[in-house]
Image (cartoon, rainbow, N blue to C red):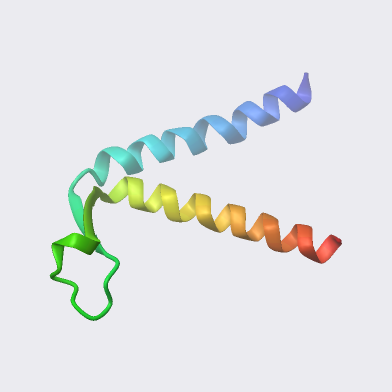
Length: 73
């Protein structure tokens, strides 16, 4: 029971912060995958800023988990 309460105390504010982050950062940003010509629209994509932030967070968690897994093996 205590574990479930602690889980709720940590999870609910984190979920609320993520929702507020997404609501505050809904404007579009352009991500370019061409380092030599950023204006080339064939290699650029316009996405909401919160999606970019969540994608980078997820990539960091996955990369960190993979690095930890390699170090343990």
